[in-house]
Length: 145
Image (cartoon, rainbow, N blue to C red; front, top):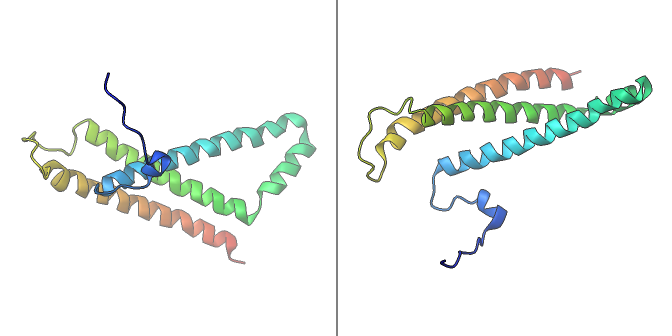
């Protein structure tokens, strides 16, 4: 067997795209938002488990969670879910071959990537941006007296 190459970048390689394009960053943020959503679900199960300890424990935990810091965290969760869901749909459509056009010879620069996938990415990210801004309006109403 040949010698395996060392992974010199480690986890830092997630964030450094080098000569790659925005697709690499979209993939990085897809991973990051997925891990954030997983963390939220874990914390949600932990907090919800306090219902088993009675009404006082539940009230105490819920009063601690009803702070501006947690409202901001909920909005960050909302942003992560919006990005993760819409980018996931884009990836699903690409993997199924939708919005790709007819197959062509894979010669660099890849025309399907430049003419089909990038416009779809920008449309999906614009839609995610609109959804995130609309969700932010609710956050602004919370902080406004």
